[in-house]
Length: 324
Image (cartoon, rainbow, N blue to C red; front, side):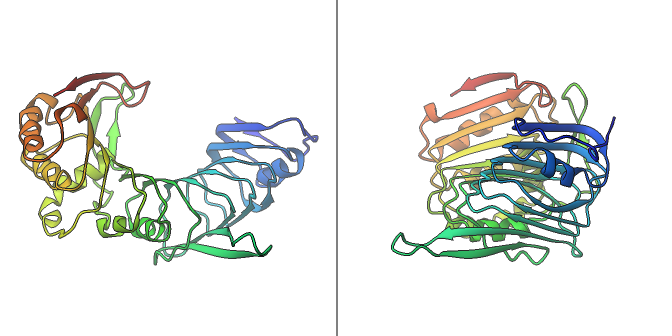
């Protein structure tokens, strides 16, 4: 549907707004800022036509930017924002000022012609009243200085921005890494990998900086890339310290999958949970014996290993779980 916000009355009692699969007038975001001044949650999911602007929301804590047409310039001042999702066509220039940002989902391909900045304010000791402004530049060169992020969900073909985000945010506790290259049918069945999405690997060395890392999640697209590049992984000399490891996989090669698993279990993993899609080329049953052998070769206790067969990833998750 089409939504025209150009003649909208002020709605100061409105605190949450979601647009899904709509087309709007070019100034829609500026209109929202002027008429809905007390928004705490804004979710834009598949929104076409918004041209961006210079926007300030004093009370916003959750923002999902899912713009399906790239804006030229989008500058947002969000002093109370804690949770941010970027899943959209990348604007030419995107600036987000978020002093207390803690949780980021970064599903954004940043071309060389674009620049993305996170501007954060880190409080200095209480003995002074001043603040240090840290500008976080996320661009193709991967130069980032970030806030004290605690959780990062990263899903993109290039891991250059991710490396910089991780390097400059040593207090991250949970990290989810994936490549958006898997296609599923409407009923959740796996179809095939996307051939036009390049397969790459993150720099696991950057995870050494994460002193508080508790959980590492690896998504099905990245697992597919790990399988394809397992010979490269073997050359990794030192793996980061990981307590809890979640693997979401659509395995294609049994031997490669077990090699990758063996490398990951060579770290300090104390708890492992594996989700295997039910329509994977390699089934859960085909992997189970090999996983048992890998587990027996490390110090993981059997009670800390769970393998789940995922029946659907598009609707509510329905698991058939097995524990060793």
